[in-house]
Image 1 (cartoon, helix red, strand yellow):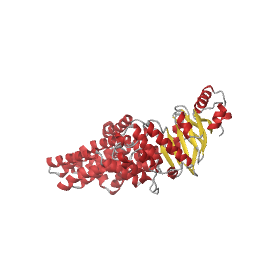
Image 2 (cartoon, chains in turn blue, green):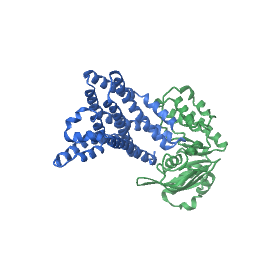
Image 3 (cartoon, one colour):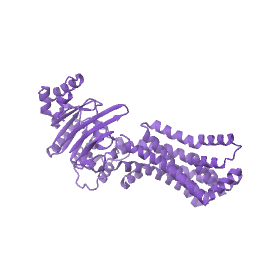
Image 4 (tube, chains in turn orange, yellow):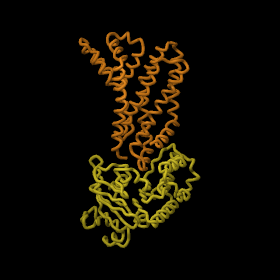
Length: 255
Length: 247
């Protein structure tokens, strides 16, 4: 397992993509730090960029990576190594690379110009969203036999969780505006890892006071011990489900 | 050494292997034949664990392929088309494969030397020609001195000199009492390298016996016409399988 991971990581960290991605993230962070001195504004801007781009990049990169490494995977399957180890090493390598890029790209500017709890949450949410969408991408890859189809499925999932889902939530809120909806919206937020990450971050900022009664309810929930526990638990489940499903499908896949 | 027991495999609606039964023994060299799409490569990939069977089992040595993966240490596999990571160098590929079997310290470098791969170890796999890639596959299959050699179309794409080198190596290993399994469409190669013939047709064993027996049954004195006759029989279904198959 560690040997496989070593080769997979060596291959992936050497790739041009890892470097470009890190530099891109660092440039984004640096430019935002230059524009504003207010840390909460910095973290809000960074969050808006991160919540949109990090899942997208994770989904596209993980799918292409799987198909580019199909040869390596096939070669390894004929060797005396466990199937599940072959898969997990590839998956872990992708997650580690994406996480390292975020930690370095966003983390170094933070070390230079300071950070607060919201920026640290931002790093954690970035890592979590990368693993969630890498998991979705691997699931799409093992279910299809065609790179284009797999990228299509990954992108569809990204569009769903980043754009379509919010539209649905808004629709529900407007349709049932006469009823108390705090708990319903909370439940709906839990069902989308992107929204969950976003809300977790927003709750670290003062602007939640501007969100009215629902905002106050959220603030109360997400600052309580059980609220933090439940939301972290949900994020963990979101990380595990796609990765677990992908592993299961891979165990039965023919090459 | 390898026993295939009631193996069945479907790809979608296509039944590739049907209740497949075969025995491979050490010291023999088998020619695995059959038309395109008859299930030869599927059988080989199932033995290697790359394809998961729907039902049935394969026992290699004394281990089932469903259990521990260590049985693969005894197998040297040369794929029909070698897929290798494009940005890996030949030298890195060899050291990685050695790293996968850390307990094997003695390497059979005969083919590496004969094909001059040592001088090319700085070349990356993506830039290699099809033939050179085949040479790498062949050298890797023999590298760990395995008991079982599975060669899927070994001579396809190789230049005549390399073909002779590889054939000589296969003959040498055969004399050392290894189990060799070759699929090929080049009948002259098969006649030279094998002593037993297996003919697969539509996922079932149509013939499995020695080459002498094959010649006797078909009434031909040469290998190629005997196979041709076998193929005609499968098409006409004149002869029943049970009479022919000795399994």
